[in-house]
Length: 353
Ligand code: NAD
Image (tube, rainbow, N blue to C red):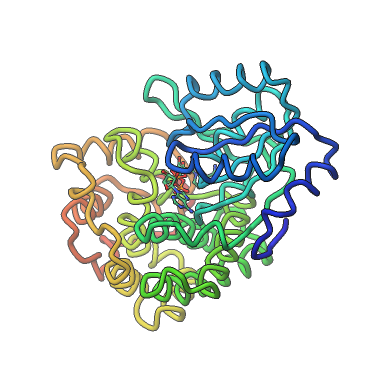
């Protein structure tokens, strides 16, 4: 892990340390210029640029990238970008064992997790494997200054959700709890500053720190209802990943608060008011989306989403019941304030009912 403004200058040193001389640089089409600039700065150490990373890591794209890596005899991949580009690097590493250097330019946090989500024929599956963990991560705030405010906010709220769910994880550990609390405090302090001044370097540095913390929480403990619901909503209605997290989190905090006092207390302490409502106000003030309707989910999908969520049992600090879950999704769809009553009664339990 390298945290340093201008840290991209250390890519050549990292390649040398890892023993590589033929790197292939990865980006999305939007960051092609940034990737080319990085490749140019590496001279002969970079043998090509693959600028076609896509959201949700389609396997068809990965296969093209693997062919290109083989044709170039690449011995390493360098991902410069957000979770989509990091995902492509991980997917290549899974198939080829090539080492990865990642320069994150959003706050998604994927660069520190052993998790890879891939899409085949519009179906996304997620796996955990140490093979996909990047060898080097270089956090360089200079690369984040061009990040549009909407991607800034949404990718950071996605990360915030990792930290909040870590507070009510089934397999908690004290260090992860510390990191989760620190991540929440950090994001709540720095995000309003970035929205006001996207060039605020101290706030940008803090957000990268928050991304690292929250990503490490995601890597370490299991997630619960929030991630399950976002996964279902994203997969079923093709909703954008980070925006869906931004909308849903306050509602799941409301739902779980009666059974997850630690999380409710932390969120309330950081935001200065009762968790779910304060979180929703925070999301609103940042200009993030606040309803699933505006993300394109049809109202007719509310019951289907609830049923899909209930189809396979998974851990949640509060039992996931059909009617309260449907009420939660309906409120999130309409953008209503999260309910102060926590969507009905709570009985402590560890699985869906
Ligand atoms: P993203 O990577 O899709 O980026 C969104 C857009 O912003 C892209 O067009 C990108 O090129 C552009 N962009 C990124 N950085 C920029 C910059 N500095 N300047 C200008 N444009 C920039 O978005 P994301 O939210 O970072 O990642 C979302 C993806 O990451 C999802 O597929 C999600 O599933 C995945 N993810 C995975 C994990 C994991 O642990 N596996 C964790 C979090 C997210």
